[in-house]
Image (cartoon, rainbow, N blue to C red; front, side, top):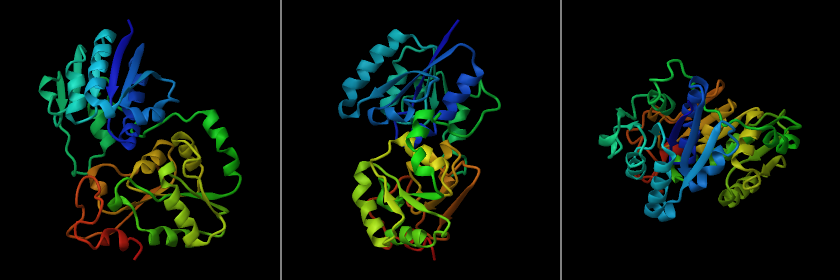
Amino acid sequence: MKKRFLIIQTAFIGDVILATPVINNLLSNIPDLEIDVLVKKENVSVLQGHKGIHQIYCLDKSRKMSSSFELIRLFRKNKYDTVINLHRFASSGIITTFSGAKQKIGFDKNPFSIFYSKKYEHVIGDGTHEVDRNLRLISQWVTDPSRRPDLKIDENENENTHDLKEEKYICLAPASVWATKEAPLEVWIKTIQNTSKEIKAIYLLGAPSDTEKCEGLAKATKHKQVINLCGKLNLRESASLMKDAAMNYVNDSAPLHLASSVNAPVTVFFCSTSPSFGFGPLSSNSSIIEVRNLDCKPCGLHGHKNCPKGHFRCGKELLN
């Protein structure tokens, strides 16, 4: 008899990417399993090409309460065997609690975890990777899980980036939602200036909203090989391009997890945050550049709009 699971992760793009090991391991280990997924409306495209997912539902946070109640009514009709909630906050906890599922699993930090069938500890800062924290939630079904995220990039997405891969290239993703997670302009300029002569193209990746920032970087370097692709590739096409790059340079942000999802070589700049939080790279070829021994670093789980101390040494001293 077919089993029906719902996986919930309504946080950021990177968190959705880091949820893929849960999805993929369950599909590999439970026969006749049908998996649905709930993500934020803007993150649906992250998983759209994943052929193992039966249905992707979206939570519209612009009308969070009404959207939540609509989803609860729908999920109760779906009669799930198990709901696994990877999100740690109240909105998803309410949906999980009233989903009508036979089994409800999630993290103890969720304020509604008191109503879960099983809850697991979630500790940030002890060096445990978020992927491993997530995988604990499926330990009753999977004892030897694959840890690497995998978006299941398809042939169409590879074909759409084929012409960009004709010569040796690197990718840079210089933007971040949080200013103090973003390496300063000077770091990116120096990275481009230090690029080997063997590299024939330098691609700048990002969302449409990052176009102006990357145009500024391209002009500042005066480097003929720098090509701004912000807004010209979707997320999955960006992952395809990163996969075959000689190196990818990223912040502690979503492109880091994109690189992990295709096992792409990656160098990560950690500014105000720390790899000890559990969101570091999982690619076979990866390195981390950060300023160590600062009393003020890390200054929070997420970034800030401005450095709380006013000096931003964790960013400015990255390449010293």
